[in-house]
Image (tube, rainbow over all chains, first blue to last red; front, side):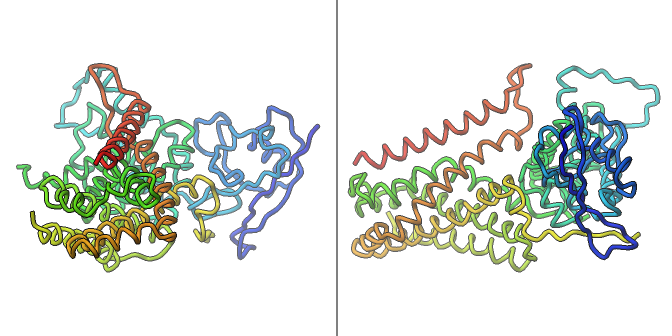
Length: 240
Length: 117
Length: 127
């Protein structure tokens, strides 16, 4: 069986002052993902290695990490593609490290809440049903595919430089609701859109959309709202 | 949450970006390479010809838009570049960069009026 | 909870994607300087024929030629990236029920830039 070297950035909050690299020699078969490589380490070489994972099929969003400097889902990144290695694995960029490959993500969870990610009705109308055409669904569908894996935040240098920036996934989700024909909450979300750390924190680096495993295209969601925000800015005096 | 004033600067940045994307290559090629190197006849930028352009209404508008919007585009992006490099940018630097573009625009406007018709 | 925050440092050097982004952003320096060159030219024009012609001669200096060569390369890169990214700044463009693909928007933009360039060169060349 072929072997590949996996280098992990280790960090223990109690014993370590700073992170350090640790190398493991992992035997692998062509069907093994980086996640399976890490699982081999944990099961057979070093039980202390700590990382998040769940579904193994790129839908839960748990296993995001930096693989050779790029944000990836470790369950759908394959060791055969990285051979002969070494494979450098690190916790997702731009987030504080809790331990080893696990990051502190509560900042994102707060941002998610702040965009009001739910349909806001025009008025209370229990039992009301909506008809939606395929074209209306096309307007928001791609933005609904986000699995909250945070690869886009790891990709976004503006978030890395300023963690007050609302960020790609949260703003994409905001747009998902604004663009949904069943939603009437655009006005409520405008304050966040218009803020310095709303859409205006983005300089269209575009890397977020490159790394997204679900083709959500957060860069598009954010930058469309720059026009909306501009219209809102200049036309607000004409609104009643 | 405070409303950002970005829309003003972004609109100018966008207009300048579009203009420079469309006419930038042509203008830089003609004025900076073709004529100085003799690939294009020196007559293309002759004093009488360019003066006539600056005297015309269309010429004044074109020259003003090119200078002003290129400046606003460039200065806005330069300001953001500083932030990207990790330099702390505050309202002072913001005013300086955009003020510079505004000053350049004002100078262009003055000169275009001064050359008369 | 104690966590470790990694510094950003020279983040743009750590991924080719970021380097290309910085190159795109760097084009703005050349666009600004070019606008200033034009502004100076306008000033010399207002001063009269001799000062203007001295400005023209300055354009033929090696430093000026080097600057404009670099400026041309970077403004071309700016133009290309501008139109490549344009579909993301627009809402979905539709003709009836058909959604105009991003590629069509990019191609339209690039063609417009080529057309403008040709127009400018032709207008300049025909005295």
